[in-house]
Length: 388
Ligand code: EPS
Image (spheres, rainbow, N blue to C red):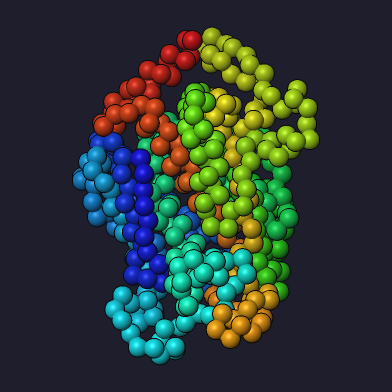
């Protein structure tokens, strides 16, 4: 499975081409729209989200509610393009700075300056339009197809918020995935702790009033992945490393943890590793799940627990020092419209990129052109490992 995305934040549309989804898998437009709508929400988003109503247009690869096995093409129109038609059009225009909305002032923390140096763009709009987190909408669309594949294989996944602006939710670690999903869906900041929810919203309000932004930590939980998905035999087949890479590829994400994560650096081995047990009904299982469902680059069959950290969005109304690339003068004023906190939306994005990596590993391990055959093979494998 692979996919590519194209499109600029204020351009005409985002395009995604997804390849490698087996044929005969049920897939509806609603399956993708549900994910896109979830991504658009969350307390702390800016005005752009009132302009966009992300609804997918499936333009290839699906017929009468089923995948064809051919590439699936997805189109997401940017409604804001109506205001940016001249600025972002593909045809040549004059040198009128007003029309071009040229950007010569790089924002610290963004791709602006490094992208300009690399691609030779004197107008840094050429960089920021693509490096914008708008692109995550296209990634969620691809991930929604992966999520559908997982759901058809009885694998459930959900993402929620653990921390915003230093306020951390406390929740019972034995909470089921369904409970986590229900609670986070009902929360404006997608979190699992009502008291923390209130404080997180206040922290977002404060950041907004002060012209600042805040980041946070999101967590993804998966239930139903059998043991032994991924592989220890080669570095690029380790499923945790693939997940780590794709999580850090989400805009503004800076780190990943599995289970106890970085805490493992402070604990003894006996406090980190999960003891193995066996029962007639479950087969092998672990008494604890401190490693978050991963060992040796493979799944253990326990729920997967992955955390990702998102830095505060670098577009600040409270400007940081930078240098104008035309005049070389220092300046301290760069105001672009922005979200003060996008952590709740980021939980949805991370859920979808993790779903993608899991579906990719499953389709590699059970390679079938037809989805019902993949399902049959996986069911057989589940039975084999239960009786092992
Ligand atoms: C973004 C800035 C804001 C966000 C945008 C990401 O957009 P604009 O510059 O149009 O105000 O709303 O996010 C999305 C459009 C989206 O769909 O998530 C940025 O600079 O990354």
